[in-house]
Length: 188
Image 1 (tube, rainbow, N blue to C red):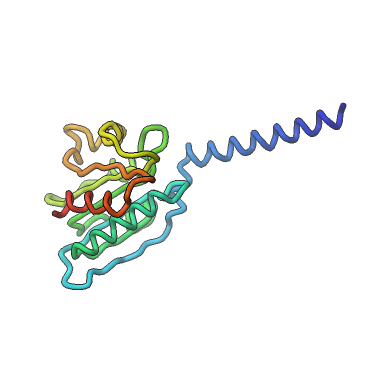
Image 2: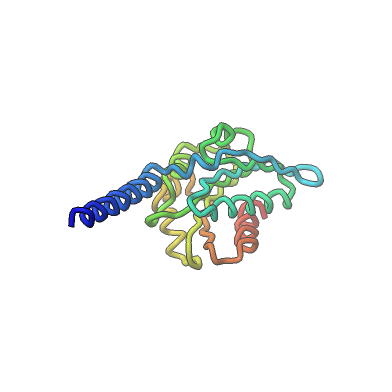
């Protein structure tokens, strides 16, 4: 009887540790620190301008894949692109970019705190095109875009980024097509 009780308590302890660990990842947004690298993509011809694509990769990595595809689309449109994790030094320096895109996963109906913080402190120059994407499961609905906008005060009516292009890129959607649509809205 005592041996069975010890086994039950050990299993319960392991279960609690797992729940606390997953809770910490979500609540403390630890996934933002996993996207620590920076990459520069140069166009084949003359550069049409500089673009910054900042991302929180999330747990599944879908947001990182979306950010990479958006960066590639901007490169194909002739931009020199800096692709950077949201917590990197390169992401903190937003001066000199004609296009700035930020995105990450959608958890519990909103963007991660790292993406919200980045957008909240972003003060783009006049004429800078700003895009925001959220990556989540399922196909995109109009409510998804509203949800992303409502979760970030700067994106709401009267906010400093109210004119930003906002999209959701569903994990099961055609990533190439969704990224291309977003970039077309940003730079034509």
